[in-house]
Image 1 (cartoon, rainbow, N blue to C red):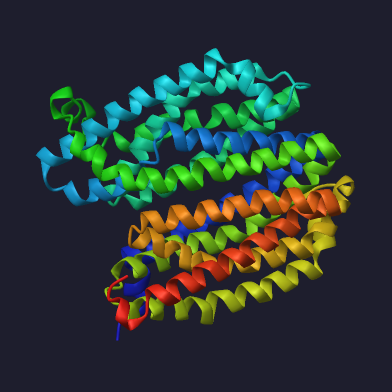
Image 2 (image 1 turned 45 degrees about the horizontal axis):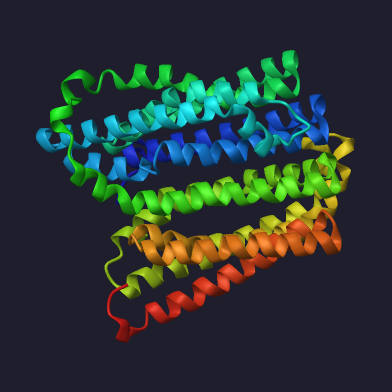
Length: 430
């Protein structure tokens, strides 16, 4: 029998424990930042911050070309082959540097246009877009270095970078919001990720001398081709997803006002906080199991394990959250946000279906089912936009969370039918 001491001293236990600490810190920082925004900016500020976050997520996906997971994969596969590793690192570095500078220029030159698209014609935050443009190349390089560290299995360093990044982000946000109000909150979203490059480089420099690995003679288009499937999947979810949410929120601002949009943004923040544990657990524990599953039966066993343990636990937690919704809103925000309580029912119904479908969605990534992922994701986003627009017209702000519930219920049924057909014995491999 393996002793408790050996388990505690194992690298897996240490990484898992450290990751848990990172998740808890991120959750606490999310709670604190929500409170700060609620106190200093109110519901209208919450709406604009939500728009900025959605826009940044889309820009992040475009400028990094969706390479993150691919960088991890091909760095890990070639870390013992110096020649191939130089090809991977050089090709990706040169490509990302070029793309980030190009998109940064596009953002900077057309900053006023993007400001109008993100914040509306009545808000002039072109300078925030300009700051984002200047920080983009630094942020992209940070993503690149972090992904290489991950590929080399330096999980501790990656987690430490995440922890320090969250702490730095909170400090910068609080100071800027205190001094500059809404503009400060938006600037912190635009600039803080770029500051992480300093922290990441301090951890990275002991791994390798980048000057020895980056040269145009190592550039290889085959590396780009291998990364294309990762780019497509990341682009659909990472670009179109936030864009749909941004469009919906702007529609709410135009029809119902910034205050109503702020209530929805507050509900989104609450949802993202409790879903953080599920997504982390899926990434750390269930995704590797899905990747290693060689047969349909092994894959089904992973699914069953999830539905027997994690899913019932979430339903229980969701019930507790609904009962305590009044306390949660007052604790996280202010009395001004009491209308958010009316959004909990449909949000929790939607999140329950979302949690039910997440394990199925991870199968797309585990087996690189690119076409199926793109088709189902686009269908889901189309339904989300259409249903939200319809329900908003009928029920006001509550219509967004009703659309959220309808979309994820449909998405869960769609994936359930797809994998039931796909995993029939006669179908062979997945």
